[in-house]
Amino acid sequence: FRDEAERAAAGLAAAGVQPRQVVSWQLPTTVDACVLMAALARLTCVQNPIIHILRRNEVGFIVEELGSDWLVTPEVWNNFDYGSMARDISAHATEPLAVLAVADGLPEGDPATLPSFADLRAAQPTGTATGQVGQVQQCYRSTESQSKPPSVLTGKPEEYHRRKKEGEELYRRSQRQK
Image 1: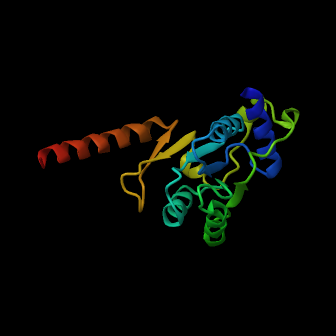
Image 2 (image 1 turned 45 degrees about the horizontal axis):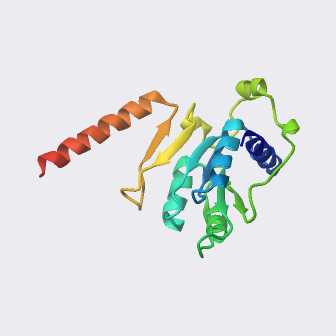
């Protein structure tokens, strides 16, 4: 698994993915999704996994709000053309959004070309959204409201605690209404 993730990280880097960029991805639950997570972690990218049932409006909102640098999707999966959707989102994005639509597996490269872990730790942020997300490592979305799904940012404790308090307050209000 590690070797596969290293090859994928090298392939992503060769495609232009840079350390600390924000990469939104919408892949079905497969081994490729797990490998992509590990590869992006190896590159120190901020990850934003998006559930596969969301479509153009929701995905467009998510990548725009987060300021994603990349959107990774399958080309076609389960009779839906994710690649066309991703390219359409990119064409209408206010910030540059690169698209990687995979058809036959993730890109692969030579792991020897990857930056060392020491170099990655010292790297300055390169993505368009890094000023917004700071030290965030992952961004997850709730699907309770699909038109504008709220986010939870990991790696940023103050954001976690603020969202947790908001969630607890919503729960208390819902219990009072019963």
